[in-house]
Image (cartoon, rainbow, N blue to C red; front, side, top):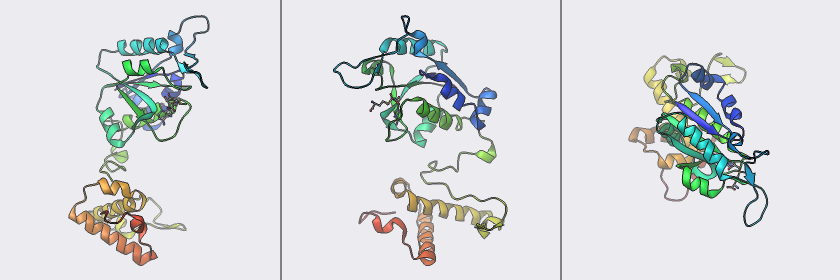
Length: 263
Ligand code: SAM
């Protein structure tokens, strides 16, 4: 997969992609990250890439032409059809489902803004999709682009080894992941749940599913509302609630759920 970054700091994103599993994917040629700096396409001695906003107000706005020339150069660098994404707090929220969709593509161009943002005419003419990484404002799109590159790269075939497989990760099936444990079995911070050492794969799978359902219910009940739970899922969740109730007397988030909403 090829990802082109259009940014005033393109090396930042490439650097972020140089570590861990994503870094190994780059080394193995499964992913390539290319930077395009609009300043290289700006004219004049000062290579200006921004100007004051029409209508007044604070801050600067990124100019159309240096960005347009950078995007053109990025597009022309490879004949594979490409989607242009603009990282923006006004975009659709990035979800695991969106990450999976992007990971199915062979090419992406990721446009990063700075200052007050980018001249709207460039966005209308060149951008296919705006994506936000959350309801907060960053000073630039580079961190957001690095998040997209990392999340997308790890879903590409061959990037994760079996030990790091993504299929059981949070959000993949609409639920949060179960808790994980490793050696030692006994520790002053507690013991590993016995079932995980039982060797009984069916019981382990059942325990994991129950934890996954229970955690989602406790931490992200909004996800549970969306998830299609089977009859056995509902039974497991009931068992989790009963267990929690017996252990702590706590009923979890149920009490704060709106009346009539089902888990
Ligand atoms: N004035 C803009 C607004 O309120 O929508 C914010 C501009 S922000 C200071 C500069 C750049 O950071 C944006 O053009 C965008 O590329 C990036 N950015 C900021 N917050 C982001 C977010 N939550 N997700 C993705 N990109 C973001």
